[in-house]
Length: 342
Ligand SMILES: NC(=O)c1ccc[n+]([C@@H]2O[C@H](COP(=O)([O-])OP(=O)(O)OC[C@H]3O[C@@H](n4cnc5c(N)ncnc54)[C@H](OP(=O)(O)O)[C@@H]3O)[C@@H](O)[C@H]2O)c1
Image 1 (tube, rainbow, N blue to C red):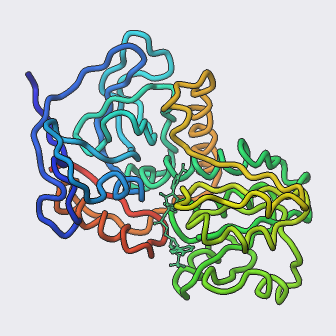
Image 2 (tube, rainbow, N blue to C red):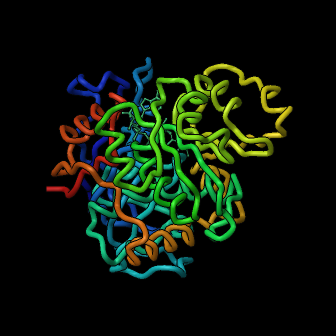
């Protein structure tokens, strides 16, 4: 039985505990059905990693492997694969119901994998898949914003948490679609980052939205993309959304939301979870393959740029603990990537 390097956990411990993530040797898998076996070159870290790893009283007999953002090379294709061949460079987020990608080799269904942008290296590409799928699905599939900029003249979107991983790509996609973008950022550094990515205006998420928008002569926004604390922003969002506008949130709420606040304005509220298609094996799950290929074209046409802000080498438990700790402090700008097994 062939072995490979991996980073995983058996206990759910605080990230400053040396055993919160462990260097492991586990069985190397092989590709069946529509699976590709990927040689992992770079991974990026997302809040989902630390949310799954959050401390709890539970022990895994078989180590749990985290990580849902990859750039790598196709090593083997399953017998039913039609979209890729060995040697192809790919990028993808994967499936939350399967082992994550923090391992030398990783299995993934080809229908949720895209061809890597030709103009990016592995680290730059690994920054993109999970957040790009999320932002693209939120804007164009869930909120049904037209991707033709001529349809969005005079339309505005408010992105709450604009400088983080999802916000950094959402800003660029919203600008590509011709929207006026207002992004929230609370620090000079995050405001500068959001501005460099194209936001038209920044406001602070720790201050009242209505008065800050009024200072910009904006009475209401047509769309809101909420990337943080849905329940904390609920009242603020209900106040600034335009009549017949649309709000999309990607963040779970810890208390019930009062939908009645949206009734008078006939506002649409919609969730986005980028794992829905793979989790439920929906008939249209191949849309994520198409979406990632579209993002690659936009990158290679220099319409979008990578959102990478920091790279750690190599992929091991020590560096993944560092990356989790950076993300857990809630102030990440762009994306943190970990590259290469030694
Ligand atoms: N549903 C899905 O499919 C999906 C997909 C991806 C992510 N998510 C979730 O979406 C959230 C954001 O993900 P991410 O990758 O963008 O995270 P991230 O990169 O860690 O976000 C960091 C950013 O959050 C901002 N922030 C911190 N506290 C905030 C607050 N109270 N209000 C508004 N913004 C705040 C910070 O801005 P300042 O420094 O300027 O304060 C920072 O730039 C996470 O909860 C994640 O689990 C869901």
